[in-house]
Image 1 (cartoon, rainbow, N blue to C red):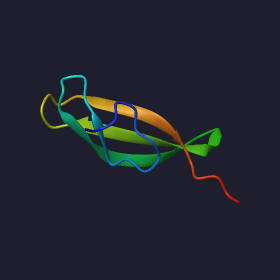
Image 2 (image 1 turned 60 degrees about the vertical axis):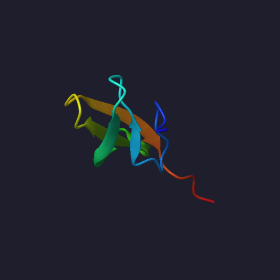
Image 3 (image 1 turned 120 degrees about the vertical axis):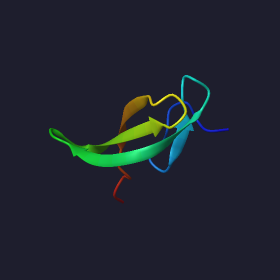
Image 4 (image 1 turned 135 degrees about the horizontal axis):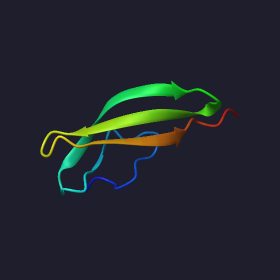
Amino acid sequence: MAPKIPTRTDAVCECVCGGTMTIATVAPIAGKPDHMRHLYHCNDCEADATFDVAKKAKV
């Protein structure tokens, strides 16, 4: 089952309709250099969802 809130490595997440959302775009966020904005799209209900996801920590 796909997660409801994706992590940095998730290419899919669960939609509110019960379908599966797939990642559509990834973009940087102005003013938040340690995060990326992931846009997911559901082909079942055509919904979109965005999540601000933390980048991988540099060691």
